[in-house]
Image: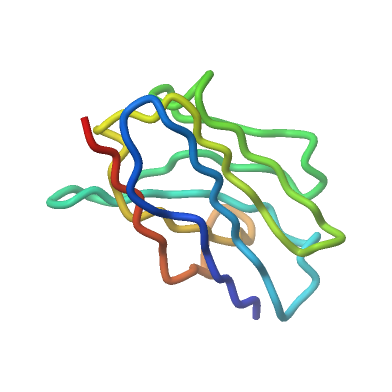
Length: 117
């Protein structure tokens, strides 16, 4: 099992940047592909981006391409989400998750990102 703790959320203005971090503990971090998801008020949780175990491969949802960048540091057991040019529609609770096969059984508690216009 792996435990995940997100940090770095906050209140920013449109156009600003934030970097989220997700620190992992427990099983070997490099064994897991990782993903970031978000859930806005009144909406279902949605996929944002994922990164392979080595970091060589990433996949982004269209709405964040060119603005968000995922990275990982396996030596620090941490995955990051750099978010630039933030928009009010990016407001959500952001979660990181660890993937096994095609599912994400391990989740963090989430961190709130609020973007004001």
